[in-house]
Image (cartoon, rainbow, N blue to C red; front, side, top):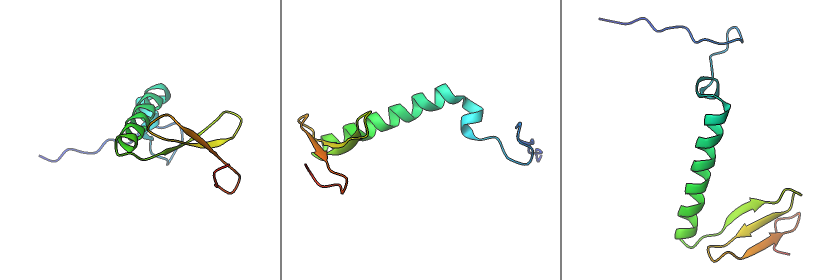
Length: 78
């Protein structure tokens, strides 16, 4: 027996509801933060650096041993 697909519920006519709309902003933030933490852990476990940013806009590479290497505007180590 075929079931009829329900129409997405949205306050934007003609635009389907997004996943964030479905699960809520707070839950989406939690899931994204966890995914990023796990990705950083995997990179560091493989001995690789990860790129991060400071609140003031400075970008740095974080190495598995905790070393931070800040980058200039061209992406070169300072």
